[in-house]
Image (cartoon, rainbow, N blue to C red; front, top):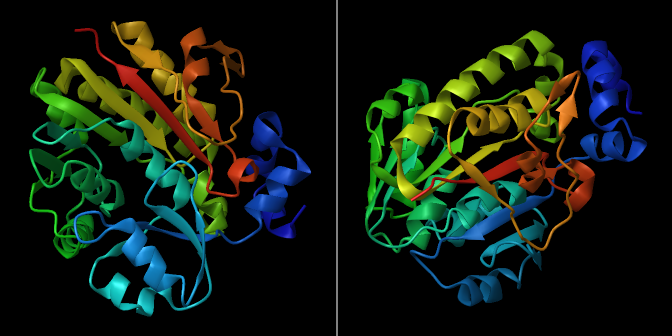
Length: 305
C-alpha cells in the first residue's frame, strides 16, 4: 500500500470495510488518465478525432459516444480545446448526463452545476433547445460555470445562485433533474491527495444529511414521469446508498438499473448496522480499479406518472 494512505488512519479503517484490496489502493495511487468529450454543439466527433489522432493516442470511452481517453501532453494547447470543440472531463463523470435521457425542448435542473461539465454535456444532447437551469450555491464557483457555458456555446442555459434545497418549492416543474451532489470527494484522490488528508467521518455524516435534504428537494421539483439522476464522486455508503434509501423510504420513487458497457462493484444493501432498500442494488457503484477511472456512484431515479 502506498505510504500516503497511512497519513489518514481513520480513512484506512473505514475503507477496509468498503474496499480494502491492494488493487483498490494501487489504482488510487495512480494518476488519472486524461479524457475529453467532443462538444457536439460545435463539431462532429469523427472530424475532431481525425485531427487530434495526428498528435495524440486516443481510446474511445465505451459508455460515451463522444468521449475519449487521451495519451500525450499538450491537449489543452490545441485549437480544439481553446475554441471549445472539446471539453476535458473525467470519463466516469460523463455517465450522469448520458443516462439522464434528455430531449430537446425539455426543462432541466442541474442542481449543483459548477464547473459545468455535465451542464454543457446536457446542453449538447438537447441541441441547445429547451432550458437548463444551472445552479450553484457559491458565488466563487459561478464564474467558471459561466465561462464554460459560454465557451461551449450553450445558449439554452440560465445560471442561478441558490441553495439547492430552495428548488423544493417548485413542485413538479422539471422534466429531468441532475443532482451531482457535494460530497467527500474520495473518488478524486487520484487527482489530488489533498482529498485524502481532508477526509473525516464526521464530514461524511454531515454531507449525508445535506445530500438527503437535497435529493428530497430535487424529487419534489421533478415532474411525475420524470427522471432524477443522483451522483457523487465518493464511495462512502452514507453518501450514496443511504441517501437513495432515504428517498425510497419517504416517497414513491423507484430506481432503474443502469445498463452501460462498463465494470462495477455491487452496491451495499447494508453497512455498519444499517440496512438499505434492496432496490439500491440497481445503482451503479464504480471503484477506481473497475475501469481505471475516478470512483463514482450513480442512481437513476424515476417518479411515478
